[in-house]
Length: 229
Length: 236
Figure 1 (cartoon, chains in turn red, green):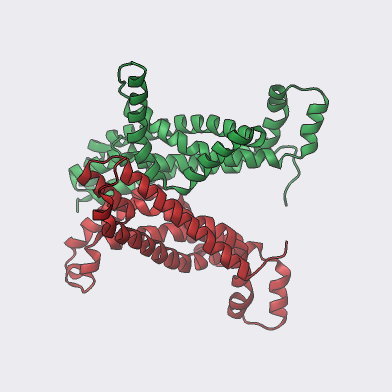
Figure 2 (cartoon, chains in turn brown, blue):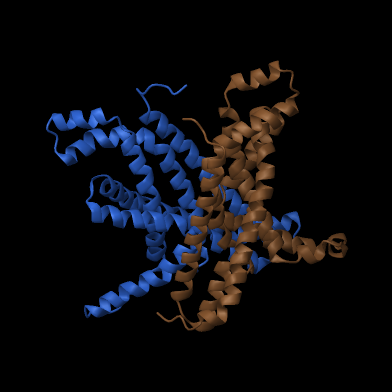
């Protein structure tokens, strides 16, 4: 075991950890924002929308994330430069970077997995509570905002913690499209220093620590709204 | 962007490679799944009946494997696994062996699968009403017989949904061995796409193949679950 390289690469590693956290937070927030309507239309939505949401979830959950990432990065990435108005648009500096495609792929993936979970959450809210809300004369949107969504969210919270950890474990895949998050930094250190194991073990340890932190955060959130069993 | 005729031509040229890759993916997944199940069964029995030391080791195994990303594990095990094996062999005076990419891929995926199946099977065994196992014990069944006749059939309905998920995961995780350079569907696709510049076409086709594998498997596992749930009370 040789750790001489550590001081030299520490700033790069810290930046990698930061990037991993940024990827995780962005993809989970946006993914969750899409997951709510995806789950909801499958429970109450008009049939075509429900089928669309169901098809989306099945397609994304049935294909490897790695293939999705490569499809977006190489596929869309090779398509965009040939379209002039995209090349000239102000978005181009963003669309040129691997980061955009990484975030996009991770967000879509999280939305699909969470959509399925939110569907289960919305279905598990006892009917009587929704009927009571309706009896109070709440509009459908108010019911969703005040009763249905908070109850469903509380029900899926324990599962959600596991899913966020799953998402953390999906982030290293974007290192294959040149994003230097913590696994990407580890690979770079391996190539530069010819140490095979030490960088990888350190990266693994970092992931274990991040997992631990996420577990704690979710335990804390769950304690805010205790649930009677 | 190739024209429509161009796409068909490209597919007829490279489709064979993709199909070989797909077969390779299925092969790796099946072996890894089978070995993973064996590991998981040992792990579950060890966790439930083992001594303090065995339980500690198994807890460490499942916790670490489940909290480190599969990609990182696969890269570590792919390089470290073959290297360690050769060092151990050298230590005992044997010649170094070359592990084929296939064996390494299967071993690595099975090691990861083992941890997840340990938890699925442990949960399923614990879901069996304890009275059934006590009854088997009261009849004087030996542990192996008890496992084969009572525990295994009784736990399957609880285990199958989890095991179906694990199978879907292993088919998708097998794409990760493309990163360490073993040729299966994902890598074959990457080569086809890189060689022809028809990225979109080949990745969409590959995604379609993976999706087909998933949907066929889901159908199959659905039937399996219905079969093993026969005679059980309906949940709803």
